Length: 277
Image (cartoon, rainbow, N blue to C red; front, side, top):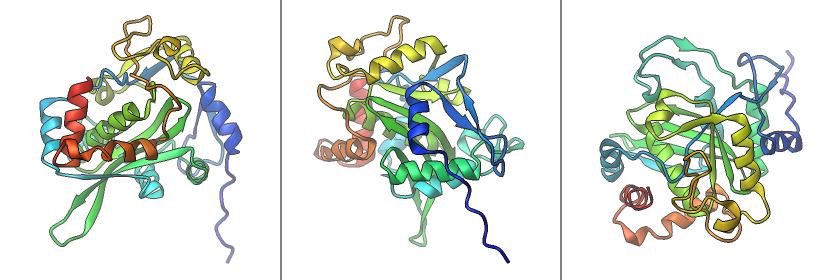
């Protein structure tokens, strides 16, 4: 019997060049060895100054229903994102309603992003729920690619109420703390729209992408996206601290180095987002 063939990976330099150019790969199915490159006509972003923290989500955060980690189980998050999932009204919260869909995350794409993670360019957030027997279950999470002052969210999953929203709240807080100015969501969904995402022409997105990668993006004047600043279409992108932006793991750690401001991580996130939204 032959060992299973390891899928050929997309070269990491090519993959990162694609992201820096506003393009990303997809596949037709989990087992499809081919990929195609996507440049959407309309692009969704989540303005980091415009995240919608609802009262119910703030309450979930403060009650510490879940524990959130960074880069603790990247491969597991990718597996969960690639699994067939509901496509109905409640699909984003993992309630099991709706028909199941296939996955655009092929084995080749997964291997390629796991390699990017190994190289320090792709990151995950994991949402865990503590069970009565002491076991910790992975119930939500997301992953994406980071570079300069950009984070491109790739996919997220949810197996428990609000778990994907919790992951996104932690992501927004960490990116703001790290000085990132652009959170790319690729395609608009009702779930993302409810959290503050907006849609724009690809041309406008490319302008924001170039600005977030520019040499002077550390200053509010150069980036044009300081706290409360717009992008020209009424879109506030993010606060952007001076100096080099922090990668997600470092930003996540820096955020919780300030945990003395609140009695728990969830309360810290809720407080941080309330103060900066």
